Image (tube, rainbow, N blue to C red; front, side, top):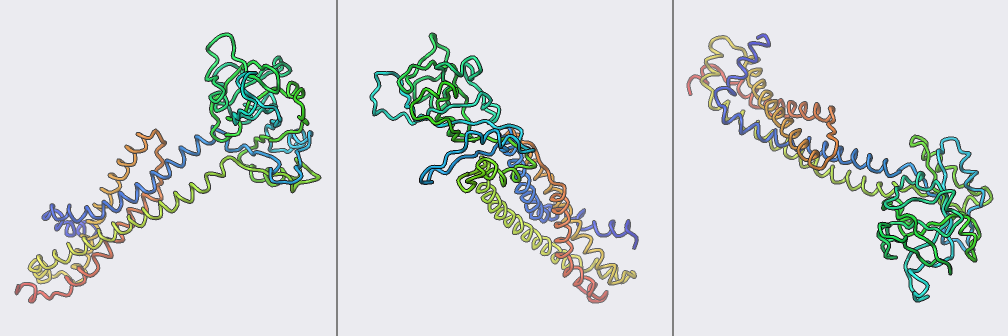
Length: 390
């Protein structure tokens, strides 16, 4: 038989038993739809998260001296300039922790703990960490030498300075002097230490007793393709004499645990998709066996008219594959539709993986072929007299 005749004969069972064919295809379609969902939704979520984190600055490396070192080993004063000479590094900005205490006023209890750290800041800090001023402005060349301060989001809340809408500008008490608040920052999810900081200019910080002028943190922005390479040489560059006293962290390291969780969750759902496909394959096999039993007279008549065993096998195997292909195609449509609805509601990009879609459909066809082998062989073994006698 040519392909046209084979399809015409093989699809007879589907055309004459539409309800049964539809119910049998449901099992396969559920498995394929699940497969599409468990691959598309995590991929879309990861891409959306990656875009958000890239906007926040996942290519920013934070250089510091480990706090557990005794005695402490501060970063050299020239570390910023040395790190800036690394080729893939695009920006380096520093902050320096001061011993100054900050309170709401000069009448506050000296024992009051605000949890806010006073830090000297480079003028380009916001650019390095991709931060934004929520209200007011950041330090500049005109204000860095004067008693002015910019508060992180958490620091502003703790000091009772939510914004700068009111006039005159609020003041806080730092190291025995009044400082005018000129800006409040938006939250920095990847840099919570800055959320809890009060930032002053380096020149103004020199007036605080006990401040040595050493940077405590360097925010190093590098080309994303070279982040790991830059990270490997930062300790020797930032402190050539004591590279062991330099700690380099990457804000996006917290994603490693999330990715591991996503992988485990996806593996579980893929397992469920596999079970659904298996159940669907059993349903197809059961349908085909029943179809052979119901159509024995048809098989006998075809054999009597000259159909060979190969023709009979091909007929029922084609029917099984077509049934699974129908379920697979329906499953793809359902999976893509459900995935699109979900990711659009979450405002994520829709990430469809062509290899997964093609693999799911191919898997459905293979399951159909496997499920149709026994029924087709059984049908082909019926002799014309045996089939027509029943």
